[in-house]
Each structure stands twice: as structure tokens, then as C-alpha cells.
Image 1 (cartoon, rainbow, N blue to C red):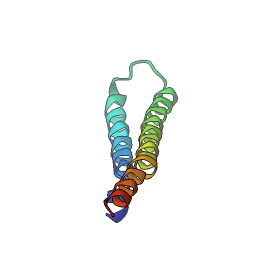
Image 2 (cartoon, rainbow, N blue to C red):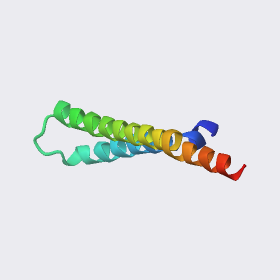
Image 3 (cartoon, rainbow, N blue to C red):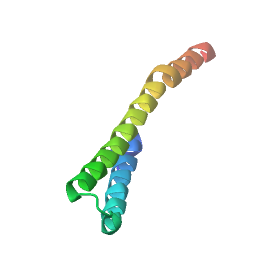
Image 4 (tube, one colour):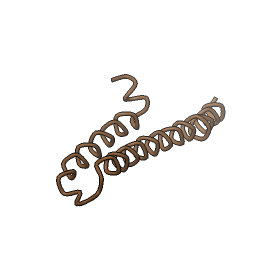
Amino acid sequence: MRKAKENPFVPVGMAGFFAIVAYRLLKMKNRGDTKMSVHLIHMRVAAQGFVVGAMTIGVIYSMYKDYIVKPREEQKALQNK
């Protein structure tokens, strides 16, 4: 729980991964004449893409907090002294 509060994009990435996999598994019945291996590769790429996107947004968010928000707060604290 502590780690999820520090970086909220990890649970979002995991939830998105499982949602994409579940959706693509349900959609497998209606894949038409597409081979099973191609369908599974598309599912894997979509799920990994979502996770990588969530990780990227998480890193950008943590850098924003560390390098923009924190220095502003420290600067305000020095000015109030």
C-alpha cells in the first residue's frame, strides 16, 4: 500500500495490463481467420505498451515532483524564514 501511494501508476499499469489481456482473451472467439499466434502477439504488444506508457508517465510525474514542486516548496520555506 505504501508503494502504491508513492507511485500510483504501478497499480494503474497492472490493472491496464490485466484489463487488456482479459479483453483480448474474450475477443479471441471472434478473431476470424487470424492465426492464434498473431492474435497472442498483438495482445502481448498492447498489454506491454500500456505498461510501458504507465511507467513512463510515472517517471515523468516523479521527476516533476522532485525537480519542480520540491524546489518551489524549499524556496518558499526559505523566504518565510
